[in-house]
Image (cartoon, rainbow, N blue to C red):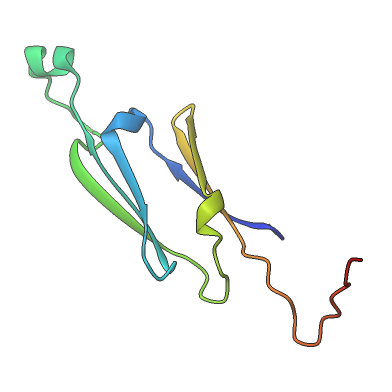
Length: 105
C-alpha cells in the first residue's frame, strides 16, 4: 500500500506459539520459521494417505522485501486469524530532497 508493505502467509493448522517471525537487520528479508505437528489422533491410527497436501515438520519461508522501501521497525505488527498470518511493515516516511519544512513559533 502507499503506507505499508503487507505480507500475507497461509499458515493453516498452526498456532502463533509454533511460529517465529524475524526481520533481517538490513530490512531486506522477512523470515517465518515454525513447526507443524501431526495431530495425536492421526498418529494413533497411523493413517496412510493417498494424497496429502499438508506437510508436517519444521519449515522456513524467507520473503524478500522491496529494496527501495525503508521499514519503520518500531511500528511492525503481525496478526494470525483463520489460518492466515498477516504482517504489516510500515514504510518509513522520508522527506524528498528540497522539501519545505514549516517552522513552528
